[in-house]
Image 1: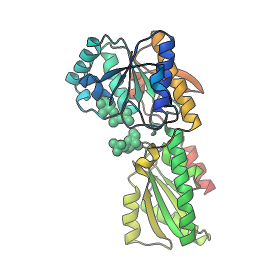
Image 2: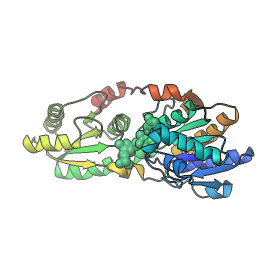
Image 3: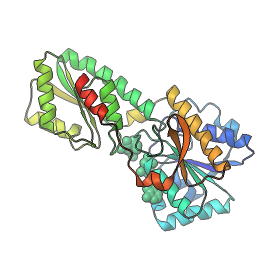
Image 4: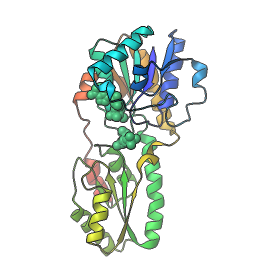
Length: 317
Ligand code: ADP
Ligand code: F6P
């Protein structure tokens, strides 16, 4: 059985690999790691993995197998090449640890009849089939720590503060970072807000005597950091505004206890699912239990965001 990590890396991926290898080995499987995601399938970059190879990785962020984006794998020819390499090495099944795009890749192989199980792992938390995905907790805590620090200096200078967080098209990280970071405004793609509204909120914060005002914005929102910087340059308000784009800092952390636990459960769950004959499914956390969802459902459905939390963030700000 082979294991790969694909798409954006997420803290906890190593813990998921470790769990899959250790459970698989105990079940008598011969395991292989694939380097650099689907690229490694195409290039035949396989290496044997045993319990010792995953020693000391549970606390490491990133993925020791490497990850990548692989355009060729999106084509039928690329997928056929991957299948050829898998058959050549007599690999019977594949575990794909990754996010939305990666699970579309898993689904493509499953549709061609190859046994695949996905493990829900992305900082974006945009995967149907898992209430929370591996890496989210760490990324959120990193964003929160940055926000706490930025608020200190913004207060000293009495400034407005825009913090942009990752999430691709999903506002989950921004919403949670905004709510838990005490933001005056949260901007997410699921409910767009214009710059005028942010300016109004900043004005109100100033009028209320606040020392700073904070807007947490999702990178996928139209009103992102760049839009707001331009807006406030043209129409300065009572607060001088500074913006910080957190970017990849959020992905690079040491996985939290929560992510290590989640990754361990899902990595082990992937082997259990395969050994029970389940394929073409995503292993995720559903109502605090490890469960599976058909990949067809995963790739066809958008995970809804709890917008009540956006209203709560506004009430609490
Ligand atoms: P993530 O898994 O973090 O969402 P990406 O969206 O970048 O990351 O996808 C990772 C990789 O998954 C892509 O580079 C590609 O190899 C594969 N992939 C994405 N979409 C598809 C698709 N529709 N069909 C087959 N493979 C895909
Ligand atoms: O999918 C994870 C993610 O970090 C997104 O939040 C972000 O939009 C994207 O990957 C960034 O990708 P890259 O690492 O290629 O810049």
